Length: 230
Image (cartoon, rainbow, N blue to C red):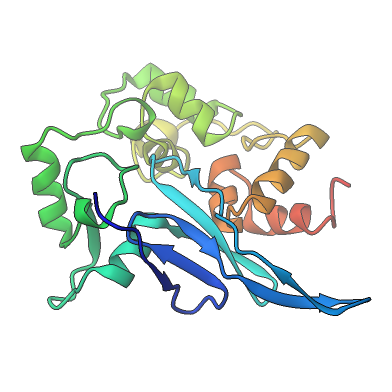
């Protein structure tokens, strides 16, 4: 069994990444009112799955959180990339297995070839290739739920939902639909706003939340900063 060892995460002081795909904070001393300073032991950072089933963590720097995918952190810190390839491939096809021995640098084409060879095409909401009828396309275009809910309902990829709603796909159908006076975006309420804040605290980026809830970046920013929907 491979021994676990750690390296400082480049650009994020106070964080470590291991060859087994775990992230933790450094042991450190912090200011203390009574004792001047206090020792704080490093802890493992909780990881979350994104909509594509990859694990990620939120790393803080200058009071801002950035979402980082675990497999890329492991690749950057433990795997040489002499050919300057842009993607990380999971050799066994399991996206949640981020051990260094399961990862390799790859080009986009190499990643695609590996998926085809090993029959790793995604299904359900991760599959953007599901065939839709014209009736289903029109229904997707007119849906008011967020993209994730629509993707699950029609068994398609979130990216495909986005392309349909934004007129980049099936526009010959949707261009002829008379728009409602109501916004097709998800209607916000207190419960949704609180969930957005919770997701943000747990490390999800504003851009990621914008896509998840189908809301403008500015709206997400105002919600997480308590400038609206208090």
